[in-house]
Structures are given as C-alpha cells and as structure tokens.
Length: 290
Length: 269
Ligand SMILES: Nc1ncnc2c1ncn2[C@@H]1O[C@H](COP(=O)(O)OP(=O)(O)OP(=O)(O)O)[C@@H](O)[C@H]1O
Ligand SMILES: [Mg+2]
Image 1 (cartoon, helix red, strand yellow):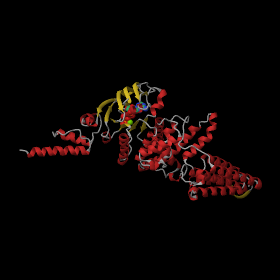
Image 2: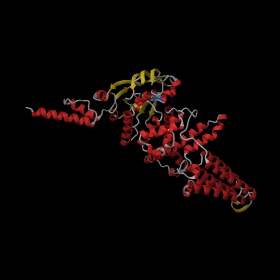
Image 3: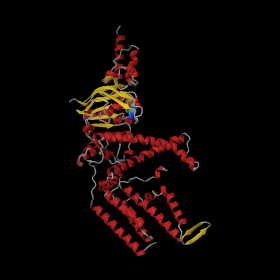
C-alpha cells in the first residue's frame, strides 16, 4: 500500500440540534496521502481544513463517503485506537494540548495510554525528544518554554506513539518568526530523514512552498491540487480562493504581466533572483547583438 | 498579588523528604493533620514545631519561602484569632463596652491560630517537595482500593493533574486580561467593595470563555493521543516504596506516640 490515508467522496455535515438544519462543511472530498510525502493543505477560514484533519484520525467520521488510514476504515469503532496510534496530531495552541506538568511526562502520555511497557516508554520518550531537539528540557515545566519549544514538545508527544502520519493543524499560527522556523525545520527534517508522512495545514505560503504537494480547499471542495510549482503560479486563481501568493511568485507574475516572459515556477527568493538574473543576462546579450 | 500564590509550586531536590514515596508523604500529612487537631496543650505544639523544623531543615527548602506562603491567608488567620478572642464565653479578664476577653478566649484564639499556621506550613512543605505528578499518582494509588465502591480514583487524579498543569496558564491569562482591561480604563484596585466586585466581571467572563475553549481543545488532544481512561494504562514512573519510606513511617510513628503521651501526661491546655 503506498497510501497511508485515503479519502473517498467525503461528505461531512454539522447538524443543528434545535432546528434540525444541517450545514455541509465537506462536500465530496477525495484525496490520497502518499507514504513519505509532505502534503500542505491551504484554504481560507472556514473552508473545512480542520474538519478534514479531524477525519484523518477518527475524531470525526464521515456523514457519507469513506476514510481509511493504513487500510482501517475510520467508521469502524473497533479499530479506533489502531487508527489513532498511526496518526499523530498537533494543533494550533501548544498550551491546550499538554496534559502533564513535566515535559517528559507529557511526551509519555500517549504510550502510557496505549499500555506500552515502562522501559519501552522510556526509550520512546528519549528518542522523540531527541528528534525534536528538546532532550535538554525533559525535566522542565511546559509553561516555562517558548512557543516554538512547546510546539516541538507537542510533536514529540505525537511521535512517541510511533505514528505513520503526522497531521498538523496550523502548528505555527501562534508563534513568532523564530518559533515558526524552529517548528517547520523540525517537520522538514522528520519528513526527509525519518520518512514521516506529513499533512500540514497552514495559512503561510512560505511553509506550503516547501511541501511536495499542495491542496487548496474552498467551501468544502478541493479547488486546486498539484506540486507547489504547479499551484503557485496560478496567481489569479489563488487570489480568488482568498489566499496569499508567495512573494516570489507574485513578483514574477507582476513582471510577466508587463511582458517579461519569465519562468513562473520560481517560488523562493533564490530561485526568483536566479530567474531575474537569467532574464537580465539574456536581455543584455540580446541588446549587445546588433 | 498573583505572585504570592505558592500552592502547587514545586522545588526539585534530592533530600530525604524529596525521595520519600508520595504515598508515604500523603499518609504522613494525613497523620500530621490529625495531630494538629488532636493536640490539647502547648507542649504538644512545641513537639510538632520541632518535628516540622526538622523536616524543613532536612528538605533544604528556605524557611523564609515557606513562611511567605502564609501571606495570602494572613487576613483569614488574624480574623480567626480576633473572632475567637472576643466571642468565647468564660471567665472574664478584660471588658470594654460589649467587648470582653476571657481566659478561654485567649487560649482558644491561640489554638486556632496555631492550628491554621501548622496546617498551611505542613501542606506547603508537602507540595514544595513533591512534584504535582507524583502527588496525583500517589493519590490515585492510595484511592485505588476504593474503586470497588465506584470511586473514580483515576479520574480524580487526572483532574488534579490537569488543574495543576493549567494553574500557571490561567494565572498568566488573568494577568493579561487585567492589564488589557485597565488599559481600557477599568480599575480593579480602587473603590468600594461593590464597585470592585463589579470590576471583576469583565475579567472573569473572558477568563471563563477561554477556559471552556481550552478544556474543549485539551479533550480533543487527549483523545488524539489515545486516552481512554485509567484502564490498561502504564506509567513512565512506577511508584515504589524504598528504605527511606520505612524511616519516614518510623519517624511518624514516634511523633504520633509522643503527641499522645504528651496529651495524656499534661492534659488539656
Ligand atoms: N462544532 C461545529 N458545529 C457547527 N459548525 C462547525 C463546527 N465546527 C466547525 N464548524 C463550521 O465548519 C466550517 C469549517 O470549519 P473548519 O474549522 O474546518 O474550517 P478551517 O478551514 O479549519 O478554518 P480556519 O482557517 O479558520 O481554521 C466553518 O464554517 C465552521 O463554522
Ligand atoms: Mg482550522
């Protein structure tokens, strides 16, 4: 199986208890999360990103359609913990996902719940803290840490389950720039070195640019899908979907509007600078030759 | 104001007291509290004071810090003292209008004040030398025999852990809201008791709303990490009684015997 999670025609509706009316939040979403890939999910506020994330570990189950994780159907109650242990979740607010008053005890929470033997818990906790670079803080109280450090502890808490997939719902939204960088580097490293499959929900385009694949949700449907190089040059479409565009992509888009004819796949500063240089160079050559 | 709260603070260390099993410490503190109320004369309190002083010395906690923990309830202690001083009937020694002081009143007031102080100091010493997790673990284990009568011992311990975990977070938040409200011109530190109480409303409402949101998110996060109650749970740190615990019990037994003996020999007051 090369997909860790498969979503087929997922429809999800919230029912209003009083009026009986229902609001459709996800409206026929189909997607695969491939093993080892880094998938970014974008979309404006209320487009259904968090709702989709919660379907990936059976916190929510489909109104219709089907979600499977590692072959287990999330609607099958008897497989609930088989599913949850395979999917690590990290949320926006680091304060609201820590249970214990000491870092290492918090990281131990999931394996404790799973009934893992003590020596094995110790091994997993040490390993997880090592991966996120927080070993030096294992006896600290969580509230003494910075936002970025707390979020890395939260990632370690998920890793201690030895998950196959890490789903992160705007993990950097409450962090300062250095905290954001810390967290994203950690996730990138996990994906690259440990082969962890990652689903990252974010509002930051510079984070999405680093993914292998991007999905844009709009009103509960997938509006755009592709590699960053395919998605981000579509500036008008992205703007219509209520998203920002990475600055490099926007610059090239504006220049192209004035007929510069640049390659629109440049997504970060270096690529953008290289493309501009190349264009300047070829112009100079073009002008030099009579 | 919020900084004075020492409840739930923990000073890591490696003293004899730190190394005691939390269950031993909880049992000792229960015996201690019983003694505080059992003692009937000042010699008994002297013995208890010696015991406490020895514990403090061994623990390496600064006595100054321990005593500072009394500050938030100072008003309460003084009030209790005055209340008992003037309102206990008995043999009069001083009178001014309707106010009178009796021999019994003096004794009773002194006893009540001593009891309160001993209670606070003893329990503070416990929380200062025991990590909150160890404390709740100890509690859970001590209560687990009562599971048979449907006492939710795991749930009680989990609730305490979460409460302790969120005390600093909520204190920080209260501080922020207070600052935000006073930046908008609200004053909480001035005015009569009613205007002060009224000024608390715009602080408490956002605090409650945020606490509910936090609780909701925490519950989801716990579910995501496969939480399903105490059944089948293992622990990173298992509690184990050691040689130090035996010493702790002996120490306590000696004190208990001493207090009972003092009570019998010296009688009441
Ligand atoms: N418990 C709920 N009951 C009813 N409606 C809800 C509930 N939770 C979310 N919704 C609605 O579902 C829709 C999608 O919400 P969701 O949280 O998935 O969006 P999102 O893309 O994560 O948004 P954001 O970027 O703000 O996090 C929103 O319109 C929201 O109002
Ligand atoms: Mg969301």
